[in-house]
Length: 70
Image 1: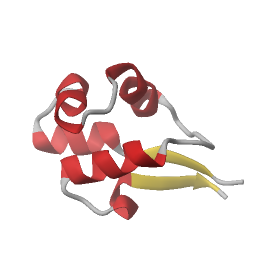
Image 2: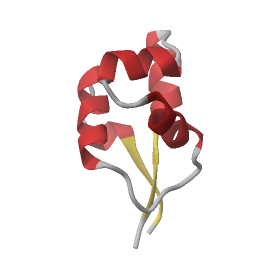
Image 3: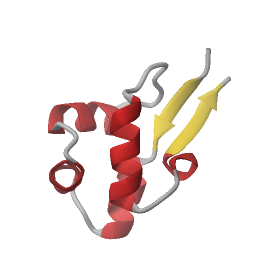
Image 4: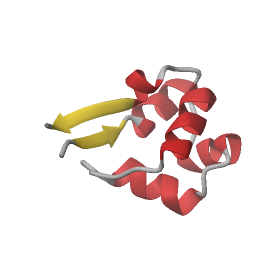
């Protein structure tokens, strides 16, 4: 099973947004988003949250998700 990391912090920094602003703009619960942003790698992520974040950052899902371990 692969492990992924979401590039939330990098993409938020590019936009000049805080994690709280990303939460407000995306509709993803702040505590969930904070966990995703802090985690060096996760094996499970809510796909709906990934879709919302990709739309919020105006990027493809592939640009949001980084595979850190196959």
